[in-house]
Image (cartoon, rainbow, N blue to C red; front, side):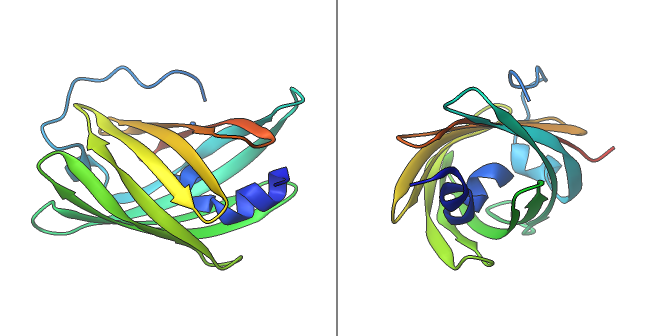
Length: 162
């Protein structure tokens, strides 16, 4: 699968990365800090060593119980645009859910676990898999994604909302 086909079919992976995870105190429930609008920049690193800059805006809606989360993500670079939504359920430290990329009609599943400051997730789609680590603090979010078996070797996005 080529780079842009991967990006189109796995848009959620970007939404949930620029360097190491943010060092932040552990949050009792990292979901509570996600509610609202986040924006920032990142990069997509290709296997040939080149990178492309990407700008993203993510909005999070957290249900009143803290057990459900919806993320809407829009990203753009010089080469592509992404419009994705993820619906996640959180229970006993486990994360399950689904994602859909609306522009290119792709979808898949999300599973993983909550950590003290975010999430460690596995993203699955019809033609790919990726590991994703999300670290969050009240004002910053770091997302690192490692796709398996593609021309993309890393996606890194840093988002902020303060």
